[in-house]
Image 1 (cartoon, chains in turn blue, orange):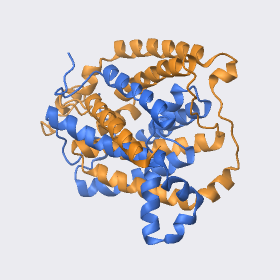
Image 2 (image 1 turned 180 degrees about the vertical axis):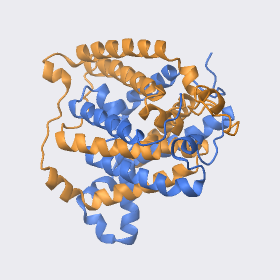
Image 3 (image 1 turned 90 degrees about the vertical axis):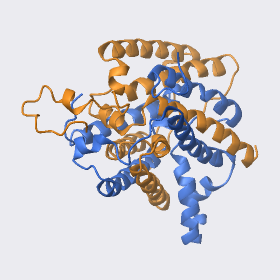
Length: 173
Length: 208
């Protein structure tokens, strides 16, 4: 049986739970699950602190107000809280850096990983904003709506990820 | 809808989302990098299960109750090029925009830098949005495979869900999810076992 204290659930149980979240999202928010545009909302407010003229940029302005934008910021905040809660219940606390990085890139310290993670995050969101969505918005939600554009974006995402991971050291299965 | 209700609904949704991501171990950099190295298929299993569930949910919501879908427009160049760049970033950070938050919740500290980088990337995109849109110069329709086929959404959704379910059964037969999760629940195999086939692995430290 599935317990809240398990360290791992079957991917099929977890996937069903995630998929079912489309019900409240479509019925209450009139939209689909997504994550990456919340980064724009946060970025816009930070930009305006330093550069008030940023509020005049249409792209920032369209992400700064309205229930949908704040809903998505709350979703990603909730993701961190939900993962923390699950980790506390199971006791599967993670180290500062995943051991995969030592094996795949030879980097095992946080100091070595930090700039690479920053660069990876930068590229990830820059790409997601060009495509207009990420693994959640284009992936889980777009494909569930049979969107042609989302399917193309997901195929490109895996192609880019696989091509990049080929440059890493092979981690044996 | 008031901003406060939006935030409360978002928090509740995110809590469940983050809980499921942590339990599934799909947020593990070991699983995400492993998927991109085609040696660990946890990410694809969870992803496709969420898509199948979404397809069935939306087949009912749209097909029975007439709930409107929220498709993104097909922008050929932006989807292709943006998707490729997104994938490069996922491999380098070992995270997706959503799972980076789950990584922080579970204790990975480098994910804080992934998120900071993501905010910076979103900011630089925002300043250059008009120029990038002008560069791609495309207009797109919100087009689905159901429209291309001229069939009702629910029918194509149920059919695709069935095909993907068969794919998952095959995938699970090829490699069991418990093995992919690994003994430390990080999507990795112990070094000793993993390198048993590699000659001269004796010098490697144990218990990494």
